Length: 289
Image (cartoon, rainbow, N blue to C red; front, side, top):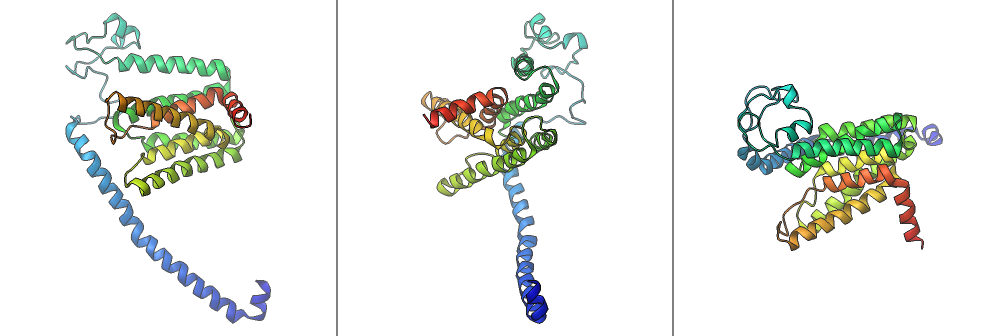
C-alpha cells in the first residue's frame, strides 16, 4: 500500500475516493432505513401489547418500586410492617388479607421461599465467599425474569442488559471465567438464538421467541463463559420441548400458542452456575463414549 501511494498517488486516492463513495451510499441506506425499522418495530410491539394494556387496570399517579407503599391489591388497605413479614405473615394470616379477607396469591410466599432456598443452595455449592455473594445477583435476576416472562412474555432490557454488563465486569477479575471467555460467551449467546429466531421465522413466518431471550442468553454467556452455553441450551431446549408437548397433549395450550422461553433458560442458567462442570463432563463423556 505504501509502495502504491509512493508510485501512483493519484491512482491510490482515486481508488480511495470511489471506495468511500460506496461506503457513503451504504451509510445513506442505514441513516434512512434504520430509524424507520425501529419505529416500525415499536409500532408492531405496541399493537401486539395494546390488547394486554387495555385489559390491565393501570394505577394512576406515581407508581414505581417504592411508591405507593405495600397494600392489598383488592381493598387497597395499606399493609403494616408487622403484617408484611416474608412467609411468616402469610402463614399467620392464613393466606388472607387482614382487612377484607381476600385470598393472597400463593405467588408471594413461593417467590420468597424460592429466593431463600436458591440463595442458600448457591452459597453452599459455591461457598460463602465473594464469588458466592456475587452469584446471588445472578440468581435473583433469573428468578425475577422467570416470573416476569411467565406473566407477560417479556424479558425487560432493564434486567437483561445490566445482568450482561455485570457478568463482564465481574469477569474482569476472573470471578467465574477469563474475560475472553466471557466476551465470547456474550457474543455467542446472543448470536445463537438470533440465528435460531430468524431461521424459524424464515421457515414458518412466525416469531419463535422474543428478542429478550437473545439478551438473557448473552448475559449468561457473559457470566459463565461460552463453554457453558452448551449446557444451558441443551437443558432449556429439552425442558421447553417436554413442557410444551405435555401441555399440548393435555390440551392446556393450543399448538400455535406461544410459551415463554425465559423460565427454561433460567433453569439452564442456574444448573450451569451450580453444576456446570459436572454437567459438562457428563455431556462430553456421553458424546465421546
